[in-house]
Amino acid sequence: MEQQGKTPYSSDGYIVDQARLTFIRYGAFTSDINGCGWIAAFNFLKQRGEAADEKTYADELIRWTILRGLAGTSLFRLKRMLKRHGYPTALKIVGKKDVTLPERTEAGVIYYVHKDGPHFVTFYRDESVPQQENEKPRYRFLNAIPGRGNHFDTMQGFLTKHNVLPIAGILVYPRKRAGYMGESK
Image (cartoon, rainbow, N blue to C red):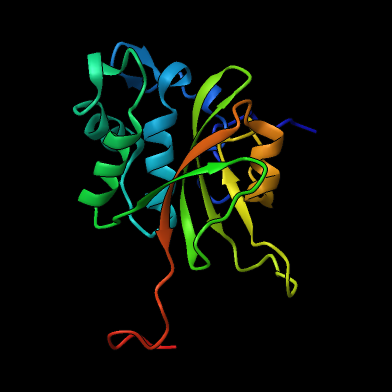
């Protein structure tokens, strides 16, 4: 039986293993070293239905980084890029032990510090994961654990396990309200 080669992608096309992205440059380095910012943008925009290749997003974001990506990607530059694509996000600074996101949070990007340094991770609410009454929402986290395409957890559970600092920054994208401005329920 042949073993399938390891890939940076999940079965549904998201980037979930940054260490395998040695073939895409991000400024002075390759994306396995400092590409988590553009990877978070790619995963977020893919989840919202936008289609573009990885290099396009990496090239678009690198134009706005400091020192051509030597210091990675700025949270504010990433926020600006998402807004240019039509997805204005709100920045929330949260404590990892008591995370409260707006009730209508559908997706976003977390900026936190894990054991190896600062990192960006995309998250979104996956409707296939049922939520019990009085239970915190569960999200799918992309590019958090190398190669793990189906990483589900609550926001507090994720940050408690993976963030070494007591706080994190989260770019929050809200759900649309049913019945608002002509939207269907």
